[in-house]
Image (tube, rainbow, N blue to C red):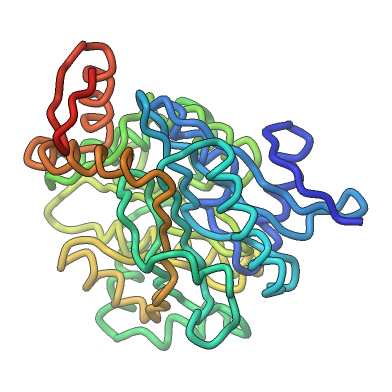
Length: 364
């Protein structure tokens, strides 16, 4: 007999993370420690599991975003089901909708990976709207996929352009060596390089203090790999990978800019591909997005974009509260540069006694 549980019990967390790793639709966004990273913003998380004979047959990991009187039930990606069974997926989304009502959130959203929702029967989506209106929990738009089935290093490198093959081989000739950053201090050192690169290039990543515990936990469980390029004793660059669904996803990278160019990026991405082959992964997700130059660099490895078309859905549970949230969001947009700043504004609002006129009413 199947049962449904909502839990953060460690016994089930451990089982869930293993389930995510073994499911081909699994994503690092579904790992419990990734969801826990949002607790630094005052958010919470929970697992919903369908269990039969003490075995997980389906489930999801939800982020409960909450500040003051606003609460949102967010599924960054999923749900997951054993053997990708559509009925289980449908039942999980129905359960999610009811859970959102039971815990009195004002809004919920989901992101269903890999499925073409125009061709499969998910009647549960009839009550949802297409798209996402809540932007403060990251969700994927798809994969930038390098298929590794039936491939080896030599056949893969020969599929690359001659110039890219030269860049990879030159990186080794220039004396770069691979090192896995495994200690807590090494991972912090690598993340510091990511942060330095982001500040120079003027893009935002989360602070180390916000990500520290989640990344260290993922490392201890073996789901995180930080690959570093060294020349002698000097760190020249590193990349962060997370594993789920029997493949690695490229999360962050950084390198020191030098003349002549050591081709550190080519070296590290090729080592990530070699690691994926060694561990018999089904592929490598070099990830979507980035500046024009970053996209061109990623495309040099011949990935295939797999976009999650028609995958994003939302439902407003409490229309008044959600309209209230949208009102605040509209006027904060010119000032927000990161989720942390948005949340700090919300926290200040919750501490002050402000009278705000909205829809002809006054709230304190």
